[in-house]
Length: 196
Length: 196
DNA sequence: ACCTGAACACCGTTCAAGT
DNA sequence: ACCTGAACACCGTTCAAGT
Image 1 (cartoon, rainbow over the protein chains, first blue to last red):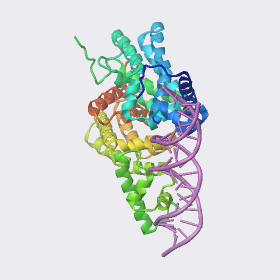
Image 2 (cartoon, chains in turn yellow, purple, blue, green):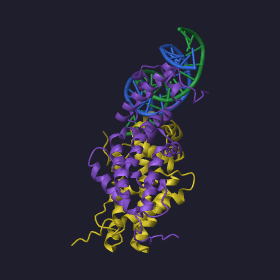
Image 3 (cartoon, protein in one colour):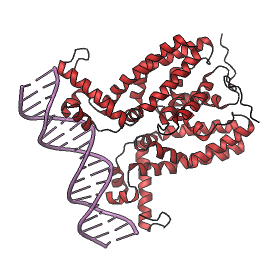
Image 4 (spheres, protein in one colour):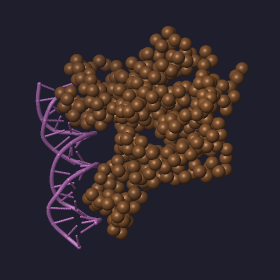
């Protein structure tokens, strides 16, 4: 209904930002925080809330997008200062750390978002980050050929199942060890696909 | 309040089974089927429903437990007719297939169940199956030492994120290829832990 | 001991009325 | 163009009354 490129009226802009700000805080604390409570905390009426976010999924996706951009940015910086395989591994470590501190938000995503929309968000900055890391490693010969972004995202899918309470550092480390080994070239059982 | 070992009165028993039966059907179709609708479809009042299942999580866990037992059983049979690594792989393939046909139920689990309860269900028959497969493979030398059940369950965690619509067979296959390679002994980058 | 269904609280969503 | 808050539908949960 509204032109996405037209700038918002200043009060609307402020409201929108305030909602996102409050939602980040509330959803991080608990993934099932009610929209009503978020609207109230943000100091807007329900109608206003729904003008900006037509449903829970829209809000969660927006908050998530904001957050995930930060992690994605780190990838390039890591590649500049480290060999590709170390950069990949460290980036995955950071992703794990991020997943743990934002467990509530991840929970909100799982509960509110369809498979399709989950994919489409990943198709944003996360994809760029992963494919950059992937390309650098493939070129350096530190991972097997033919892996795509979704292979990686699925392989680390277990991160979102780790309990943030408890020994998550060790758990995540073990998972990433296994996964990284699966990524490397010439893993046994699959003779290294020597292409052209 | 009730003694878990005392047998239920026959009508109560029948109600309980009917609820589970209906819930399996409804939740498989859609993970967010309402408890009210399930109770109604099962032909019981709300009070009866809550007598058997104090909340959504309790119901979902119970339905899930029933289903997962079937997959777990297959593990032993596979080990009898195949070499350990093929048995493991084929079992994972079946798990993937199962995850896809029961996508709604998996969705219901994700939405309704806490991390803790998710773990505790896995600690049931699934754990037995995985650890049997793991032990056989470790002994045969087809996987690295020191992997535990949770390593495996986390490594295949991505299965639950695959979209059942679309090319899930190929996706799951690729994921399991990566993961199995990560499991094998002597994967590069981790010099084979030669123990004792 | 178990079942029923009305009743309650709460949440997501809509909409007429405002500025 | 945007905001407000009352109103509605629906869901989870409880409980007094039944057998």
